[in-house]
Image (cartoon, rainbow, N blue to C red; front, side, top):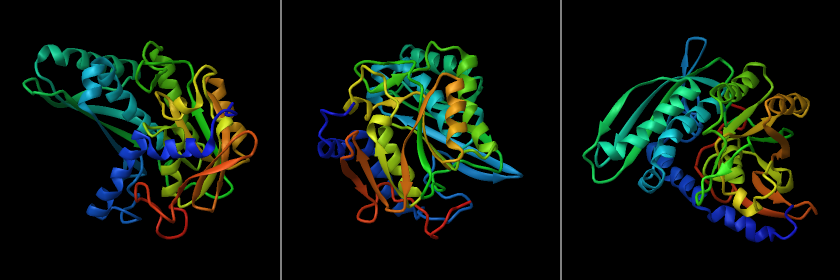
Length: 331
């Protein structure tokens, strides 16, 4: 429950969180490179670059990892190189094809746990590492990983959420924090068959037309990720904090800044919501309607008593600088 949480303070903490601050850096790049709006077949601002290819799309995702994370937890950094990219591919309704990595470490011994994490995750998720770049004579440890995937003609994007949709959150709560970090790990130690089947839920929803838009929950947390989805679709929402799937022993403020290893936000027509929730429940994943999409272009949070606080006004200030520029759905 959120009874002891001051909503305005919490809204400010979300706006000022490190994960959201990192997302704000995107706006300057989008402006500098002229990437905003619908200048390509699939707009820039999604979890993957989507490239039309025959009767479907190729999906290209990349993640870079800060050196402090690589140094503090090298095995999990390598593991995340696979895991987070596969989540991005799934978020757009795709399935992974192959992985490449770029690794800098001070020596071969420092590279070993990173490579072990990459190798273990690749095996568990069933996606091959097909090449990359390695340097074991660097002063610092840095890692970047890219994944190629494929989706059918019906993509899940960040640009198709519509007023009247339900905002659904699906999070695997069968995990633990990798203390003292904000990383909720529901992946390492889980059977590969389960991990692969869980990821396949997203392309299944896309192919069956049950979901309109989706986004992988990132380091910006549940509400921070919702901000990016709402901005891209030029809509707003009220998010009910107490409806967000959450482990019972984790404080709300910490959970809102957590990065779950399996977590997605979905924009779903209300008549499809029961079927979507049922699919996640069948695989032991907690999913719930956490709010509704509206046309306000303002993101608000709400407690169980009905009190609301504004988190972001997209008319007043952009977050990542991406959004529809035609006044209507992209697809």
